[in-house]
Amino acid sequence: MSLRVTRLVKNIGPVLNVQTRRNIGICAPTLQKVSDPIQQLFLDKLREYKQKSSGGKMVDPSPSTDRELKQELLKLATQYGGKEGVDMTKFPDFKFLDAKLDPINLEE
Image (tube, rainbow, N blue to C red; front, side, top):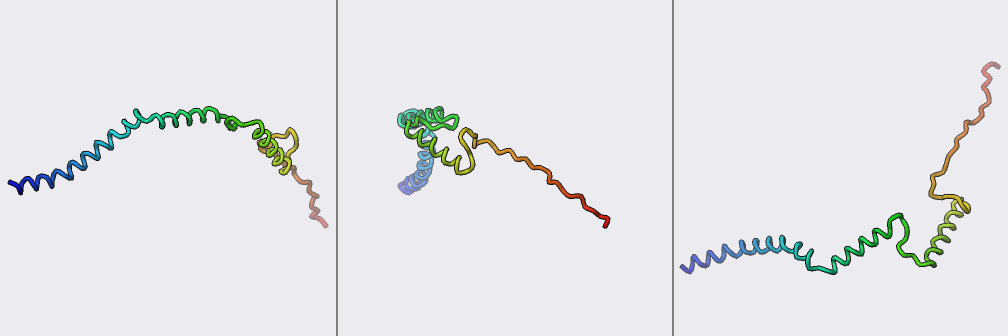
């Protein structure tokens, strides 16, 4: 009888191990979702940042940072041919004119 019990314990051990891991794997996300206020706070801050940063603007810039950004953009615009009041984000307009060609005189 002790041989049977030993075999039974050896066979049940791995099965219980697998079942325990499965149960913890299934329950862990549901428990975290309910009981983790830090994670919820982090997600709330991410959503708030996403709302503030819509439109491609900086989020809560200080006046000095905003002034510095404008100076750098003006410096880049003048470096690449822009002038005051010119929209450097607009794609340039190209105008290709046909070259005037001299008529070829085939009769000589």
